[in-house]
Image 1 (tube, helix red, strand yellow):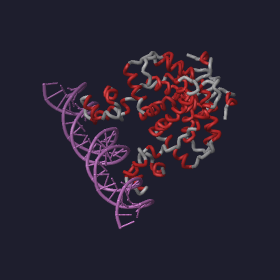
Image 2: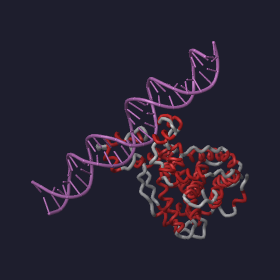
Image 3: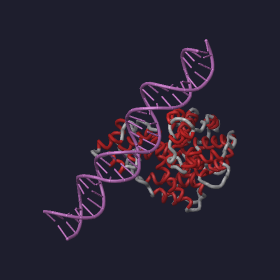
Image 4: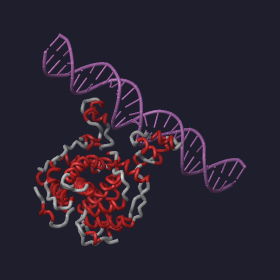
Length: 175
Length: 175
DNA sequence: TAGCAGAATGTTAGTCTCTAACATTCCAGG
DNA sequence: CCTGGAATGTTAGAGACTAACATTCTGCTA
């Protein structure tokens, strides 16, 4: 990550990473399936599915996902150091990496879809709801990273999730 | 595209494509910057921005984007042949290509953001609105391709856009 | 019609990511 | 000590893409 931040993603070769780590190129690929994987090593969050499933089933699917994500983010502590910010900034400034975020989001999307269809929501509706909310969330994330100032990430995400809904609807969140 | 559909994207080499086209490998790269570019050669739609800008400025940004896209899709004729369906199916079944859709969506997202901020919407709000709506739309598109049956694409997209909004709000569309 | 300029295409050689097959070193337990 | 498995290394190669340079093709002019 240090090399990426310093010289850029494309400009850093796997050979250089391996050398900096005092290891052979082969060993690098045994730990990371691809060069991109170094950037996308986020732990995956199964809590999200549970929180979404817990939202009021009487609401439209989009609202349940939105309120669920909102609830999930309020309970998560702000773990954002410079490293995370650098990482997201790196991603935001690189079209190929930014697209790569979606390879990761897909797992989360599937998880959300599963949680929704399990409670009787139609498949298309579930997919659209998940895709829309993750789309808004990701846009906010990348937007946050592109800014020089240091506003809190969580606050920004919360704002984004609120912006996505009808005014006043946030009072229906189930923790 | 025929080779991709027949043997798969990863299994088809540029050398094979070039040979099938009766051309050298070098010439291939002079027409397509990357192998992926063969799949993503959609013409870009500047109409979208105009239609979105035309929506009622009193509504929240997400609603304006949503209703704008809805209006844009109703006016577009259904141009979906087998070729298009094959293409989308190919993308939907390949994680890397599916993520690549977002490299394309980015242009559209920027266009929408520009249209919104031009009428006084805040940048974050505009980005989130655009990201969310494109997220839902893309989810519907990929979901459509993954199905065996032949429901109309436009109908599917319309349904998706309606599902994203509050019930009854669609009456506010401005053509 | 000959010839010329520029566009299109080809050749060659190379870099870089990633894979596979096989060899080597390291380390814990018997 | 020594032995078996894990971690690491070496070598060779496929495949996407780039750069420098050579060649052919095409349309236009003298």
